[in-house]
Image (cartoon, rainbow, N blue to C red; front, top):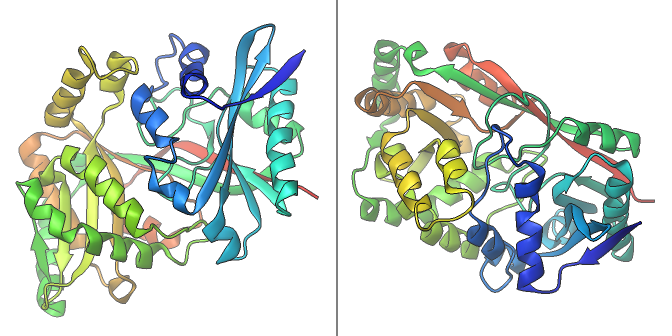
Length: 373
């Protein structure tokens, strides 16, 4: 018999966070989170995302053993401001037992019905900075710290339960050696002169901080037309600034400003922490932090985390300035592979940005949708 237990204590939340550690034990492609960070992420007293959202967390128990988990998420901005009556679900992990999936997703459905919502969609997080999608192809590639990994049967469970494809995301990678430095140097110089733009590079985090609020203004504007978009609030920006900016190597954050020193484009890349997180096994101490700091300094794979261009400057070649900046930095650091975060398959603008690098699609992931009514 399967019972569904709602999380009501910090001890139970640790169970929720630690369940995938047993589900993916000895799996060389799964990348574990830092347990404390994940627990804090779900704490309304710590994470400002809960200003505009609520979440309910559930564990599935069978014969006294945890066999599944799910987070049922309501984003109130999405519902009240955008009038999208979506019941989100995320952090969805299960053993290969469709009855477990059914029981967990029924709990999500009940919450959606209570709030007169129209459909379920997932796996998704709270907003666009969270992980998204169930992996449907590319199971033999190591995950990243900003994506979920899952067994192949997840897709089958969702489809058997009547869920249908909602959005598909592609993950691509390319060799840094494919970046033509001379080409981007030439184009970059042309674009900078034509539009009176400047490239900003950094060596110190303190020099980046004054631009972070502006960066998220550009982020909100550049992504606002995407169907998945939920704006990032000021409180969330402050949280991101405090938690992440200081850990990102300042040389991997690039900005472009106009003649009035107004930020019009940005990009953030991060060294791959995947292997370091596997070695850390969910803990910063005693050795986890050492592995992460080592990766921060020496990793040869780079994850393109965020890139945004103000709508007034889109389709004007501004990305060439950013690529020239990274070309110089990556060459100095000896970077080998460039890996992109999941991008919507129908996002033609982002596809055009990368097409000159002959990228390889090595993973695909999907969100699934099902009517509640």
